Structures are given as structure tokens and as C-alpha cells.
Length: 315
Image (tube, rainbow, N blue to C red; front, side, top):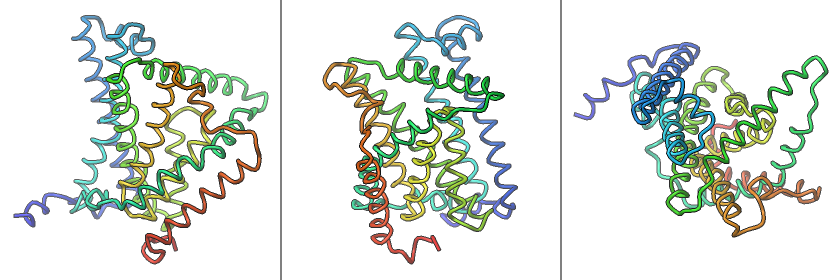
């Protein structure tokens, strides 16, 4: 029975790498459009207003009901952009979708621990990259582009604050699911499990696959003044996936990264700590910054040897 059911999967597995990339892109666009429109329709029914009013409400939610709806809308967008198209894609191009995505592998405890430590050890160096990114000045003829990027960054920051502001444990739990867990799972499925596999097939080089997937990962967040730290995060998550051959490792690391920011914001917003989410792990001490990078590389080196250098496919 299992063998017969597998025949229904992977009938497009012989597509070229470019054909698979085109198929994945088309599935993402269709799924994202359908879920986005579906979310607006649900908002129209809930609030009894026009689609235009619902869209305006999403850009500037001011009531608790509107904020709750925005979280719901973000959740279905995550499903529509990342999770649904990836599963549809793997059903079409692989006889074993769970094997292709490595969802059928159990993560090791040591690998999980190291992946979490990597997220914290890299913080000082990542903050250094953030400052470097923020201080970058465009040539005069690109001034309008620079101003647009700054406006987008401010807008994204305001939306993030609106979502994260809560004084209840239940609100914190919702944020951990909507802003930490679902994005971590969905983005890792797309950019690591699927993206790296496709780009490795295309470029025949796993390092180029990680670099390109990390660039796309950072670019598609459309927060260009924090591009460099997000690109570095993508690189770390990419190598965590390739070294362990297990998508649950970067999913866990990504969740730790997101959840830590959410919890720190919650504690700071409610007066429990005095350090903000943006300042957590930041330092001006050059020794700490360099040490942060070296410790992170050492942890990755440890994981590489723990998982078996001959099995990682990094050669």
C-alpha cells in the first residue's frame, strides 16, 4: 500500500533545475495571492467593511480587534507564502516529500544545543553588522532609494512593535506561535530544505547554494537596512542544515532567534528588564565582537566534526 501511494508523488521529478525553480516560484505566487485575498475576505466578513478598509486597517491597526486580525492575517500569509507551496512543490517533484525536506529525521540533542548557542554567540558580531549596514551611505543619485529604504525600515519596526505589544501571558504565547514558530518552520522549509537543494542541483556547489539562498532570504524581508545581519543569519542556518542534513536543526535555531527577541521585548515592555530587544547582545568592544565571530565559527566547526565531516557534502 505504501509503495502504491508513493507513485502519486514526484511525477515531475525529471524537470530541469530551472524548471523546478520556475514551478516553485509559480506555486508561491499563486498560493500567496489566494491566501492574501482570502484573508482580506475574512476581514471583510468579520468587520463588515470594504476590502479597501480592511487593507488600510492592516497597515495601521489601532484597536485590539484590528491587531488580533493582523496577527491572523500574518499567520495565513506565512502559510500561503512558505508552507503550502513548499509542500505542493515537494509532492510534485519528489517520490518522498518528507525525505526531500528531511522532516523524517529526528534531531540530535547535541546538535540542537549547539545550534542554539550559535544564535547567542553571534549576537555581538551581528549587531556590529547592523551598525555597519545602518551607516552605509548611498551615492547622491540614489538618495531617493535610501530614503525609501529608511521609510520601509521604520514602517516594519512600527508593525513589529504593534504586534509584539502585550501585557498578558496568553498574548505572549500567541506571539511566540505567530511571529516565532510558524515563520521559523515555513522559512526554513523554503530557503533551506527546498532552496538549498534546488540551488545545489543548479550550481553543483553547496557553498554557492547557501550564499544565494541566504541572499534571497535577506532580500525578501524587504528590510534593507538590516540586510547584512539577516544575510549572516541565513548563512548560519544554511550551514546548520547542510552539516546536519536535518531541517529541524535550523528550524530550532531560527525559532530560538525569533523567540528570544519576542521574550526580551515582552520583558522590556512590561518593565521587567532594562535592556531593549534592539540592544540585547550589542557591544562596542572590538575584542568581544571578534570573539563573537570566532566562538561562532568554533561552534560550527564542532558541529561539523560531531555530525561527521565525511557525511556533510561540503566538499
